[in-house]
Length: 378
Ligand SMILES: [Zn+2]
Image (cartoon, rainbow, N blue to C red; front, side):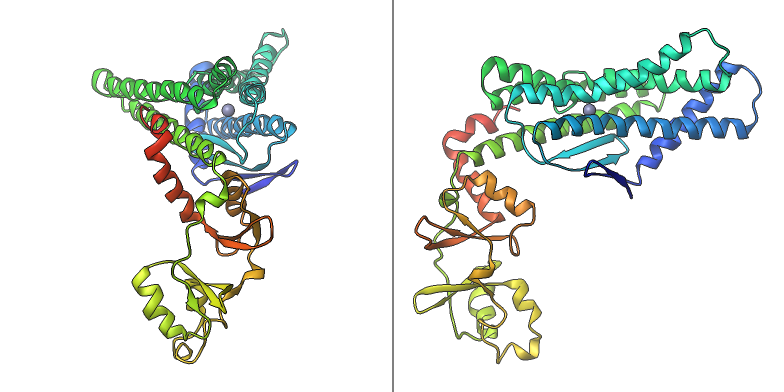
């Protein structure tokens, strides 16, 4: 569900966010009932609940937008902001290069929540005759924003507080990966803590509300592990040149081969997604299995591989000296053809095709050497 665009940042709502509005709506309505101690009609309660629900949704957008705008100022590319039932996530494509930038980006979200929430709470202390409806609303939304900020500031990576912790450790140790490792551990522990609290709530206090702590705790500890792995993955890739990723093209299909034979003698036995097409000792193009699929079955007997293949010139090219992380970004951004990039050396000689699988293989083999210290322990 598209919501709109702010400074080129797309806002997207997942349908599960409507659940936030519903839950906040019910919670705030019962809060309002308790505050007024009057017997209010369902109309006024529904109105109160809806307004509060939407305001909380707005608060979350504001929080994420603050992260993104600061990130943008520091030269980060922002794809979009996605809102789920757990809150939001700003899709920031680049990893941060400097701990100071990371600190500012991480702090921006909670800071905006504190300012917005604080403002609403301050409005309550001004001696004016505020209608009880607004008093209830400012109270509920204000406090909720402060709680949101407080929760996000827990030093549990990848939550905001965890990012701040990571930035601090990174600055102190000068080592981003080791800082991420420590911050992720805190993330994992906090996740377990929430799960534990949830279980206690259910089995000791006997309230089903504990389910939420368990769900959120599980989410936090899993994202802690994943974010750490991703950091290590990206860091490893930035130390590798594309040249090291591309394998030797052992099985190339000679030009003039019929499609039906290419399927039988290459695609079936070797189970690869694509093969280079060779003519007079030179690679002239690539035949991807999707190209094969486009040829109707009855024509496969009479069609040569050159017909559906992608000519080499049409595959976006990169230098063999590009670092693997940059290359992966190109592929993720969609700047590749069928996920493939053509790799050339300094003299413009074609060196090979790079695709997504090559990255996994590289990481797998690197594990045996210097990577093992990173992938263990979290
Ligand atoms: Zn945040």
